[in-house]
Length: 92
Image (cartoon, one colour):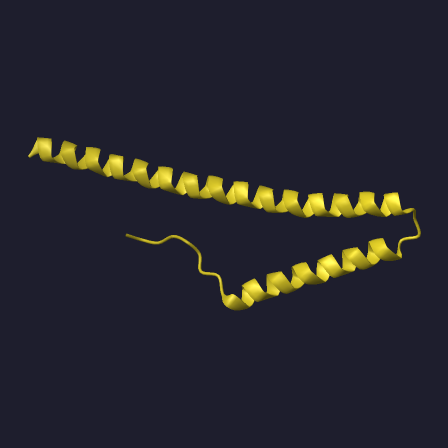
């Protein structure tokens, strides 16, 4: 069986986690130093958290769809090969 999953290095994973951490620190620092009321800062903090959650959800949904399509295509290829094999055996 052929594995079509891309290989991701540990360095890339570490880099993405580091970038996420830097972005969180920068966003928190920006909200903290913002000259606005506490409720405005809370609004911006909630919006930032929701944006991160939404991004993760969209990424997961797209990945799940791609994996589902890949499995569906494998099944269709297997059915097609079976039909071709049956058709060629009937001719012999």
